Image (cartoon, rainbow, N blue to C red):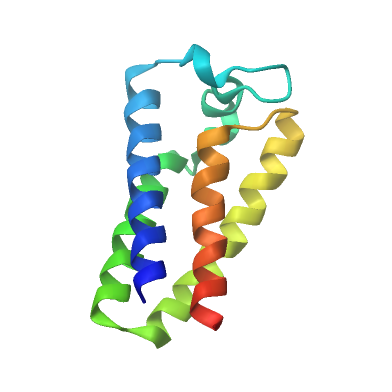
Length: 122
C-alpha cells in the first residue's frame, strides 16, 4: 500500500506540473535534450489532448483517484482503474512514437501508472 501511495503522489505531482506548464504555454528548455527527447514537441502536439481534455489533466484526475483508492484500500476498484490507466499509457506511448519524441515528465507519469500495477499485483 505504501508504494502505491508514493507512486500515486509522484504521478500526481508530475501530472500537476505538466498541466501547469502546458496551460501556461511554457516549454522548459531543460527538458528539450535532443530531437528524440523533447517535452515541448510532445506537450504541444495535437496528441496532447484526448477529446479536447489535456492529457495532463487526465493524469491529475487519475492519480487523485488512485491515491484515494490506495488510502481507502479499495483494491477491486483500483484494479479496474489501473487496467484503464494502463491502456491509456500504451496509447500515450504510441502517440510519442508517432510524434518521434519522448517527454521525460510524461514518461515519469506513465511509469508511475504501470508500477502501481506491479505494486498492486504483489
